Length: 345
Image 1: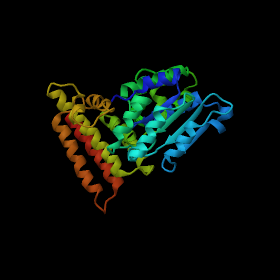
Image 2: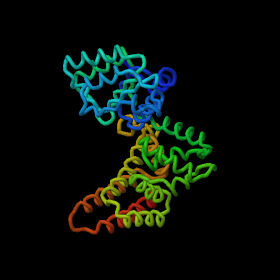
Image 3: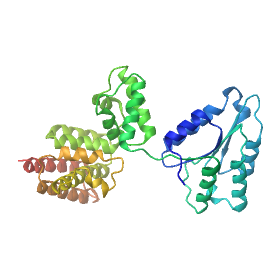
């Protein structure tokens, strides 16, 4: 069975929002947004108290839901029943029969939404449940978007607000805050408010966005790879003063060099820099390999090996009990700078 995607669901809500829905998938932000769209399209706010019925699926019975679905609208043309996180995949035969009767014969005045907000059903009954909604209602699986799609979404949303993004800035935003759509949306709103109608730049992202620890550590590496050792050290000292976890910082440093190694190995072997994304977990993070290819340009493979060895020794030191972790990081950065300087000659 093929679940409905975002675009089809959007059209369904726009043209005929009534009916039964099963909304699930791993993109929490999109699930929340489209549940809200259905509720908004169906419920008259003035009479929501009478016509909007919301259930905690872990506590409510299917019979309670059925009664609300069958209830007539009051002072409105429609009703909406929202059920969050009901473990439908654990229903027995009689429960599945009741669910089928509800979904197949839903009144034409009602929107019934089973919203898998925080659970991910996986038992054998899940296929039977999905089949019911596929046949009689709307089966909508909302999955995480690829980076390219997220970038387009961000750029279009900002443009609608009269605050266009400078070329490449939306991608940079993702690099800084990660791929969680809820976080990206919040940071985009901050940027639009900060820019006040002008074009958003990378400097704006640096000024107002809450970067992930990985992104902060990559900033250190980016300065180092550009030959700006003093700036890299200053950024590292700032992170240390902010009590960022040294082991996590070092882990991000290691990731940076592994990206460079993989990208360089791919290019040397006659492939594109992003080829390793087919074999390693770079889903929605392919840009890291492209960045690594740029950052590692001119750096010899022996120098990359030496840097990875320096980081491995630092990892051992950080995990020992009696060591000044800040000093280890600072010494490691100095050694990396020297290795890169020699390796680019």
